Length: 315
Image 1 (tube, rainbow, N blue to C red):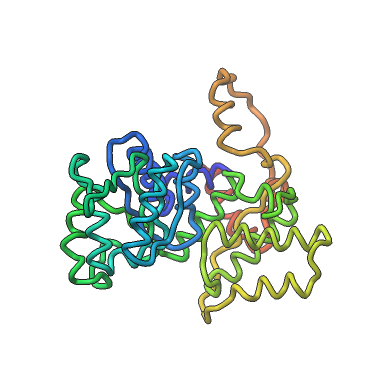
Image 2 (cartoon, helix red, strand yellow):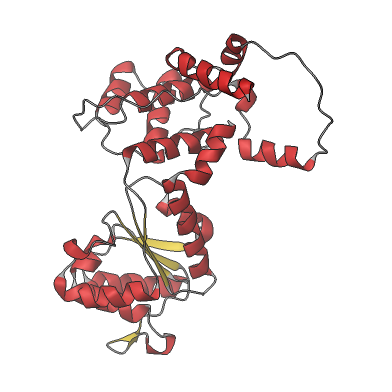
């Protein structure tokens, strides 16, 4: 479990998501008018905004500048922040980019055609396109985009399959991602470990690799286990996510969760840190086979685990 806690501190996806949370907080505190971030679907962009704004936001997917103005007006009336999701079209439209530039400029100048476009709760803009790459943007909107990003640098979340796989597994191991399925039913450890295995073996063939994908896989398996979904339907849902062709070998199967690791690891380690450190007690070193069996290392990982175990014991 310690290994997965370290992943959450070193993984590029985890680092970028931490910066997304910080940027969202700065918008909520009024330090910035808007936040821009791009990245693959299902990694938690909406979740971060929901948590930081305490669910006080209006989510919309504008298709033209009139719908954008209407969303701004609705967010003002409801006193909420505005979340523009899948907002690629904004950066392909000179007029929409101009509206957004006006709405995030100097507060006393936030007027469009005489109407106030100020959103006191702030504006969050998310897209799956790389905001650091201007080639896909409309040339006429490029000037407005430069102004937008000079006020708040966009955060681009990497779209690397192995980094996303590692981040998803780490979030499940330490953050309670797979505690309940999409129907609110608890997911047992056997189902969690089965989901880990399937997610890992098929990682290069999945349509998207993300925490949301892993949660959907575990949820489908859990619904089948509870008798709410027959085997054919479970298999259909799982296979429908395999849209890529790949001959690449999957990464090593992650260590499985055992009953001793049910509580969130971050909570357990914070509590342990408050206790006085006891004096070291000399105990006989356990056998490597015993350690492997105790923590539930899968058969495919035992050789690798033995090597690492021996190196640790030698130190």
